[in-house]
Amino acid sequence: MIRVLVAVSPKMYRQTITLFLRSRRPDVKVRSADPLDLQRECALFEPHLLVCHDGTPEDARNRALFLVEIHYSNSLDAVVKANGKDLRIVEDIEIDDLLAVVEEIEKTVSNE
Image (tube, rainbow, N blue to C red; front, side, top):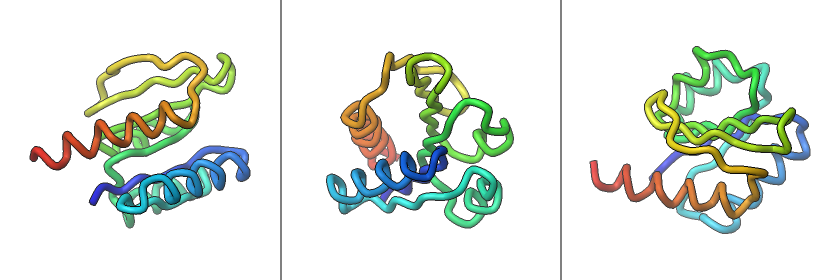
């Protein structure tokens, strides 16, 4: 079972993403965290995927194998990373784009 940690602001975005993922993928363990508590939450939860925003400290971003970093200053474009390397940019990310990333990660993790 993969673990997804959602740590974006504002809180309403974080709650919406978390509820969406839980409803569409009940087999995925999803937790939300205030970005200010990100270090502690990463250490406790050990996420496979971290969904965060630009400006998240690098040491927190490196705690997950996969990362979706949403750039608020650029039309909600997002960078998808694996093991610290950019995989692709998703322009104006939508919730279904995030779901596609989760599905990719499930395939990767199940093959290990």
